[in-house]
Length: 252
Figure (tube, rainbow, N blue to C red):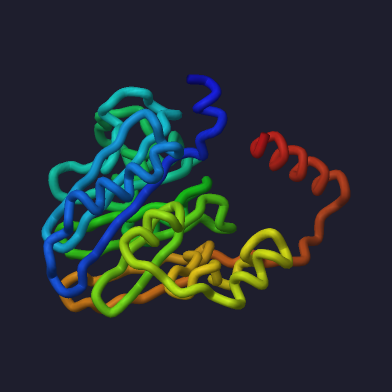
């Protein structure tokens, strides 16, 4: 059990939106989730609402109870989330109200309900998630500031498919190879952050970005919510050392 945990890489998320309005195939969604079971061996779940479906494979880290399993929902809105929100306790205090779990998942869920995409500016952590807003009939996808948590997306004329790994997407729709992606991989042993993967129809979701989709009008917009900036600060060496020590202690 411990060996399996050390080999796992947090959780796995997946989702499908059929733009043509076709109902999601539950077996396809389950198959995507099964292919990421090594990421989340503790629990699996799926949610389907007509042409939209979300799936999750969970590795239990914060709040080991089944109440924190995903997809996380209040019967209306739905969240699938991979990662960890480091400042979830502070956000929980800001949100107020009652919580049914002690998980960072529920905190992220309620933050998105209250603040929408503006919640991204308040998050300190590593994450990739998809949030379905029932009232707006919208889908929000986002990835952490520097892309620690993986997220891949295939956006075609008939559907939008995303997952924490490429394999679950490939099994739904085969893709030709991307020559530039192959060159990047064999040159750097990694696909650099230009969106390319080894497959032409599958892209790496941009770090520090979110994609919001209106499921009724099919309008969508991708925006950057964070960019690394450098500012000249007039501080003494003592003050800088003190601030550096505080940041380092916080990170550790």
